[in-house]
Length: 165
Image 1 (cartoon, helix red, strand yellow):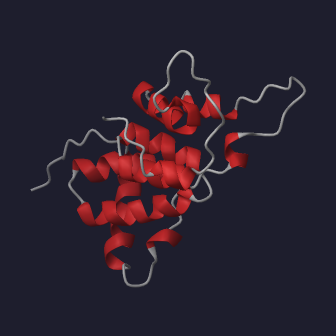
Image 2: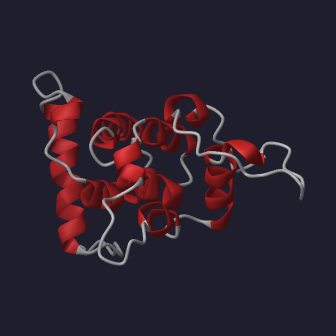
Image 3: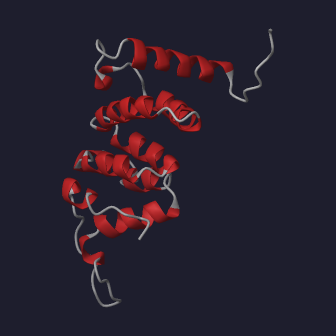
């Protein structure tokens, strides 16, 4: 009996899911998760679909790939994990931040907006937690306390990142 299945998912997203499903299951012994040719945008499409269809094995593989991407694209992975509210992967992304990923070279206007532009893409709770940990003087901040310097030990404070407290 030929019946249509009503799935409210664009065909290209469904094709991506099917391809990822085949790679993650059929070729799991030959392909290392970190080396999959998936980018952050594709992961953003796959994550909600994987969660919708309860594909835990596929999610685990995708998380390994995202951890690998976080080494070179920490902000992009952080933005994605904020949307997914995935604290573990957010901590992984934050631990891969560097001073150069926080501060881009100064332009003619002498305004350095990298951190502010990137933070604006996070939810308010994540922005506040990021800033709390990033500015060393904000722990127990009072009106008379200066904010101090930026804490650039990302690997250490990423462990404390918890916007849900």
